[in-house]
Length: 317
Image (tube, rainbow, N blue to C red; front, side):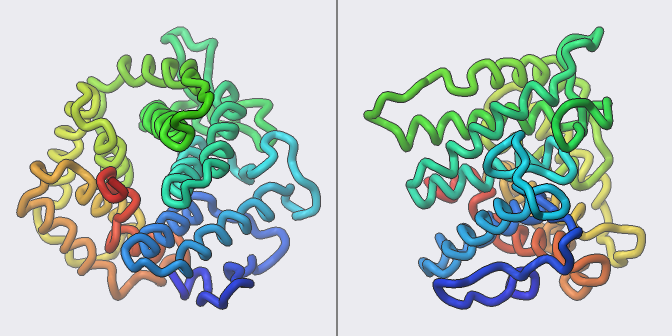
């Protein structure tokens, strides 16, 4: 984490700056990084890690809240916007903000995430599909049109789980106050409808997709869709990793870390020797090759796999 974001330097800590004014931030990586700092804070009790999490959130605000020239704030969302408007990046950032609120007991981060969900939701929904509600995988920067009209394999599940977590934390942190219990109700119901319409057809051979499936199902593990998809994902993962993988050739580390993170978040009674073997194999395979492909997403997700922390539903309870 220090190699990617710099060492903590006290009250004026700022994450390593971008290399150029035109370089884009990768919101997925920054979301994992915020979660890593939060996990380290809880695990160690050191406030410096919490300060790094908050500083990174502020840095994302300053960079992604502006256009590509880093000069003007965009209107679509007052806190943050994406150079590439991909649904899964947005929901991952919402989750990072959500966990920050839960740890700091400061509701503002969760409120930012709720506002983000409310302002982006309709822009990703395809109301004209003959198969009922569907989602666009990617929309334009200003949110005015779809760029990729197909639906991501996990987009409805991402939305359903993330929105429910936002709603739950909103209720927890505002307990005893005048809370609008209907916050995100419509958005949750629309996502739930899509989830229920497609979960029985779930299949994947992509490690990151399979790992994300396990992570998503871990939040509401007893629901029918989660039970079914978890069993399919575990079976497919065990088939892919049936034998010990010894070479990184033609593999991507961050995709394998999706698997190792997901396996560590499933219910404990479903973790066994085989799931632990796969996690250990992935860690052993990649620990000496973290910076060969990139200098951010792979090492950052490796850290998340070593300490899943806030990605685990039971970590903060």
